[in-house]
Structures are given as structure tokens and as C-alpha cells.
Length: 424
Image (cartoon, rainbow, N blue to C red):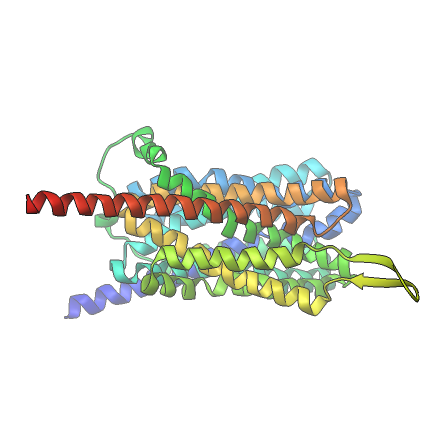
């Protein structure tokens, strides 16, 4: 009994320390979504260049996820996450001294390593809990995504009082402190490590599994879309609705905060109702919301029997923010449900598979801000970002419908054949 209590206490301590570490990592990973606005003004960047600036940390944070997931399986999450966090402290601090556009791009690549923390923490936390609680545990850890909202609260306040150059200095200290706290309150269990001496190539053979690619696509929508919008929404409020940065960041947090915190709720729902049902409804909620958000501000005049009649159709800031809030909740739940698929089907190599799926989601978060900016430069329509996301959700819904229908029919046929063989 004492052993079980100690084990439970260790598991909860690991979960708490890991969630704190991931929250700080995500806060810093999203920093350019806020400090990029004054940098854009200072350097005279266009929309596409701004999108690239905000996306650079997401690139390395995505590419590093696969090796980090595999290293976590082999060496354990505690040492991998600690070293990862420590390695970003100096690059974060140096951003304060950057002066040229390429300086920010290069340093952003190094800072982006913090984004790989998800692929370390997910398998590390999951292995401390029984299967029927893994969805909730991973959901609580994944609530560290709320760091995107934390960034929107902290960074504008620092910029208002001391300028944007102070933000990286404060964030560097935060990262160092979080790394030390994580090391102090986390633990190591050698039995969680993968004992196999298989090569990286052998461990990556799961890429031949079509299910992995399916989960990659889902995650590129719910996580990639979350990252892309978290980086883009502050500037969207500033340019579309003429809010100042502080108010814009507060309103944008109405999307980022539930999109992170409620991931634990998504884990609970996935444990109770199953990953498929939860993910299916998440996609439908996003489909409806993005359709409404896609409609640009429109003015038109029609001829009536009494003369010309002018109309103006636009989403007010309240309606717009309310729809974003709904999307944030849906994406939080979807991020948890996708990883419930993984924990159910890939028990022995969660790290490697979560690394691959996390890579896909991260690359979605890298590509989307650049595409958002490019579409605004090309079309001049700011809501084009939601048009793009609407299209990606359509792909997910069609894929889910046909693929799962095919698998259900195959399963039913197999069961029927087994029954006929038994009777024969």
C-alpha cells in the first residue's frame, strides 16, 4: 500500500513539474507573436516577412520532435527535457541584442528548440500512469499549451513598461528557473525506457503505418491551427479592429487560454467516449466556426423599388471573439483526443510516434503563419487565414469518414468470417 502511495505521489510530482516546464517552454516558443509586432514596425516588414518571423521558432521546434521522442524512449524524459530547456537560455537572451532581420530568424531557430518539449513530456508523463488515466494525464500536461495565453498577458505588460528588448531577458530567466524547478521535482524510472538497441531508422518504421499519417493530418489541424492562430491573432486584432497591443493580446488570449487549459478536459472526454467520437465532433465544430469566421467585411448596394439600398456585413469584435473562443475549446479537446489514439495503439513506442505526429502538427504551425501573411499580401483579405483553415478541416472530415468506415467494415467482415469458421 505504501509503495502504491509513493508511486502515485511520484507520478503526480512528475506531472506537475512537467506541466510547469512545458507551459514556460510554450510561452517562450510563442514570443514572436507579440514582440514581432514592434519588430515588424521597426524593420518595415511586410505580412509575409512577419509570418516567417513568427514561424521560425516553430520550424525547429517541429523538426526536433522526432529525435527527441526517440531519445525520450531510450534515455528517459527527465534528462532530455532538462538539457533541452537549458540549451535555449542563451539564445533567448541574445534576442535582446538582435538588430537585423536575419538575426531574429537565426536566433528564432535556436529558441524554437523549446517547442520540442512536448514530444519529451508526453511519453515521459504517460508512462507514469495506468492506461485508463493516460488520456487525462496527457491532457493535463498538454494544458501547458496555455503558455500561448501566458505570453499574451506577460509580454505586452513588459513592452509597455520597458520596451520589447526586455521581454527576451525576462524569458531567459524564466526558462532557467523552470528548468531547475523541473529537475528538483521530477523523477526517473529506468523501467520506462525502451531497452531495445534498434537504430533510429528501425524505430521510425511506424511511418509505414497509414494510421500514423492520418493522425498527423488531424494534429496538423488542431495543433498546427492552434499555433498558427496564436501567433497571428494579436496582429489580426490590431489591424482588423484597430485595438492597441495590450487589448488585442487580451482578446487573443480568449482563444489561446481555453485552447491550452481545456486540453485536460479533452483527455477526460477521450478516456470516457473514445478518441474517434471526440475527434469527429471536434472537426465538425471547427468546420462550422471557420466557415463563419471566413466571411470578410462586406459592403454592397442593391437596387430596390425605392432606390439603392446599402448593406454592411461584418463580424463584430464580440462575435468574432466568441467564435474564436469556441474554436479554442474544440482545438484543446482535439489535441488530447488525437494523442489518445496514439496511447491506445502504440503503447511501446509512444515517444517515437508522438514525435512524428508532433512534427506534423508543428510543421502545420510553421507553414500556416507564412501562408496567412502571403494570402493577405496577395488578396488583401485578412479573413483569408480562416478560409485556409476551413479547407484543411474539410480534408480531415472526408478522410475520417471514409477511412474509419473502411476499417469498421473490415472489422465486421473479419468477425463474420470468424463466426462462420467456428460454426463450420
